[in-house]
Image 1: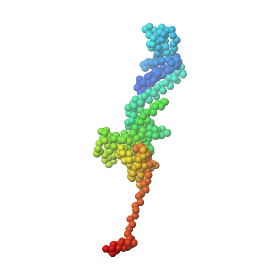
Image 2: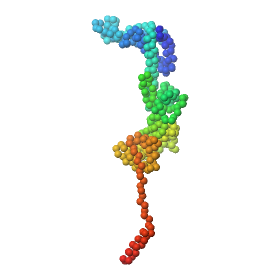
Image 3: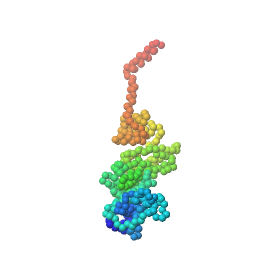
Image 4: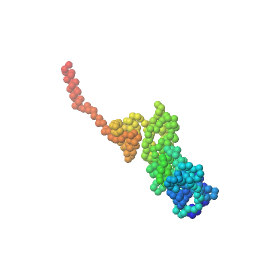
Amino acid sequence: MEGLDLKQMTAMLAVIAEEKGLAEEVVLNVIEEAIAAAWRRDNGERDMNVRAVLNTKSGTADVFVSKTVVEDDIAYNPATEIPQKEAGKGKNLGDIVEEKHEVKSFGRVAAQIAKQVVLQGLREAERNAVLNEFEDKIGTVVAGVVQRVESRGDVIIDLGKGSGVMPRSEQIEGEFYSVGSRIKVYIKGVDRGENRARLILSRGDAKFIDFLFRQEVPELDNGSVDIRGIVREAGRRTKIAVASTIPGVDAVGTFVGGRGIRVQAVMNEVGEREKIDVIGWSDNPSEFIREALSPAEILRVEIDGKSAKVYVSEDQQPIAIGRQGQNVRLASKLTGYEIDIVTAKPETKKKKRSKDAEDTLFSAIEEAEDSSEE
């Protein structure tokens, strides 16, 4: 067949399926669609409904053109319709009949069309395979192997039955990814592009921290403690607000763990450079803001609507604000209040007047006057 060797394509079917990680039936359907498109280009019209059947044993193919049975004496479209008298005995109006044609040869243009359809069809099949495999895993953390690092900084990660991309914006600042290394990633979602669908992976998302804590804190499963909020600047600092649902349970202590073992396990995964503040959640806005600004010591909080003016001593101001405003910025995101850090002026104490010689003299005179009056 000119420009398109069906026997060779049939022989390569299993190889293509294995390379792409697809079922042979899926690849076969793609090839049959390509044959139908090529036949339509050489022998039919664009709006024809054509399907092809490839015989995988002989490497030959037939195409079938579907047409709808219409009345004999009305105008009809020969590409999609057929008069009842031509449809054959027993065919009623509205029935679908198929005309069979043997595939013999394709022209050069038709062969090019077939190749394009195969490429597009395989991409679409790969896309669907990836989505089907990982659709129920979106929102979870999985292990993968770094496949390559692209020039713009995106990291391609092999997940076994598919791969995903971790964009630069989803990475931990300062973290290095070497090819072949095994890492944990959060499956954030799917990017459906024109040519392919890609899994979007992340290590910088706040939900990555959420998932890691759920692996370390079994009390989350039985509901005795809860995560009320997480804000994060990956590679720098994370603030996680926690609460207990059972009186007497120390939520912060539960998440930190004995000697800090639980929070340390999370830090080991994201890197020691990223500080994690575990704070107690409160439904009292003033108290929650105090906790959110940890480790700064707060003097008082004044709330006006969704704004809060927080007073601190001069030595605590840098701690409350944090490096490049990071601490107060994360506290604002966590609490939902626009926080303004204000330095409180130290109270001036009135000096107690010490008795001097003059005071002593006046006291003596007053005592003398009192004695003479008696």
